[in-house]
Image (cartoon, rainbow, N blue to C red; front, side):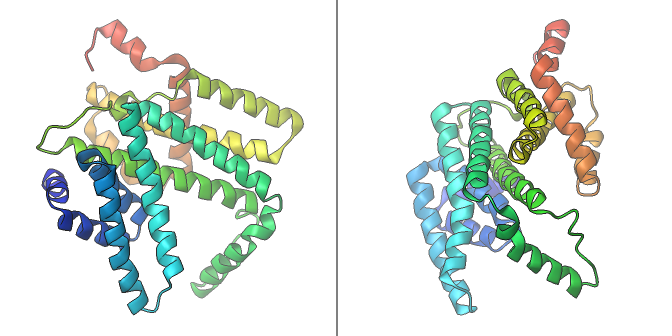
Length: 294
């Protein structure tokens, strides 16, 4: 099914535009729209993808205006969906390495978080309007927002991580669709082999130590974000274990099904797994010992 969808999206421009329009109207446009754009860049080139994205943006803008929306909301939606996906896809084509692309995305995301914290020293005031909106939504549903949990620092990290995770997932999903095409494709590496490396792992350890010594909140935020990002490598390890027939497929499916309910626990377990693998490279050791071709 996914193969048929991918083939149709890249076969005709009108199919690509329609797919992008539908994706923008779904609940998670950054994931679906971003994945389609990545597919189009990899299959047909960046120029083609940009033209299709602009066409889809024009159609969505008309729909929004007819429904009483604003042009600013359309620009925010499409820019937040298409620009990161385009940059990641172009980087993947340029570097020809999925691992290197994701490593660079980690560095860029952390740099963006650092710049935001430097530019917005009073993050409590910055996020207060959004927290008020959340509190109102909670009240309308008979609930109460716990302000001791949803602090400005928590919201900052949550937004930064959500942005990175959504667009990283879009890249991986789009690349997966590209690999399913019936036409000839280029291999940029496998997700199961993802390794952020010891340099990033060492950076996490050093920043964590420095944050503890000087008790700096902004450094603690960066440390936490970097550590959680290793959940992506943890997921890669899980998929490698499945492909190596060490872990049954049902265990992988169960993990994804439980993820929405056990978010914090599973994310921390995956991050710890990925962080440990970055230091000790368990997959390489296993393959060397077993002589596996996985």
